Length: 415
Image 1 (spheres, helix red, strand yellow):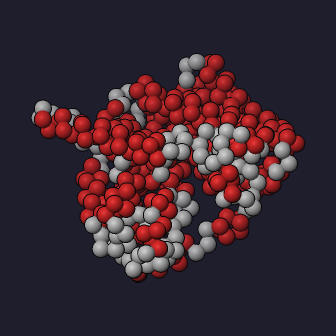
Image 2 (image 1 turned 180 degrees about the vertical axis):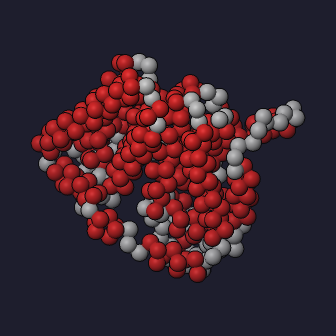
């Protein structure tokens, strides 16, 4: 999940997760151990996995091997939902899983800042392979890689983790950790700007805003001391970010000239015409594919798997290699799983968010409620961004989303 550079890393991760899930199922069957309870939406997940199995043998499929390879994005990381549900019993358990995500994100952040200040030489000195990825954005300013193999990829980690960082600032007992994370906030912002992933900037702001607004609802229930303390922390966090971020941005522009273009592009996040132009044609393509292939065109048609089987797509007797284009989750799932499969996934996604939202109302424990809200904010930001991305199908967003969806369902079930 950190590098995604070598097939052994990302395919190996899929095999490991599925193997662990199979081990749990086999042990439960052999020893007749029944789970204490099933996670919410288990039946929908079962229907989804069955539908994916059927689509492996789709009449339009490129080949059996390509279908199996394409199926993994709809299966392997989805099983983390069940791990998230069963592996956590308390808030402390959830923190145990949150800290590694925050730690890796900070490593990506500070590595990305260094790369942004230095320019392309910072990654080309590591390996010439980076030049292939850089060529895909040759007409744009340099985007930091962090420790990933994709330009701008640290932004994905940042938008996912930022609501959890803010949660930890308010709920961590260590004053030192609070101070360090408050000081890290401007660097998170700088990395977002240099990465130029405008959807990630929007999702970061959306997730943090949702978390803050959700906390405002309960402000009247807090003691005046706690309310004053939260206000002071908020002022410190916002003040630190707004004071240091412009200075860091100016320093980045002075250090590497292309960063001026990077900042200008990132600022277009707030221009409606620019963002709507980038997503033009999505609805037209959706309706076109819905009429053409209501039951899908087989797996490995779009996305990473589609690129891996380009030769097969060129020889396909049914559709030209460039016939299908998916730049959002719903088009991708429609093309590969058909309308029934897309509908199943939509029910699962929104079912998780709706259940998580309504569970906040009944949560009596303030810290657990705040934790649920932080996770819900991150997951909602991810779903909001699916109109312009396929995030929940690919790491790191896929593993984060499905694991913490399971965690959220566990917390909401313990009310």
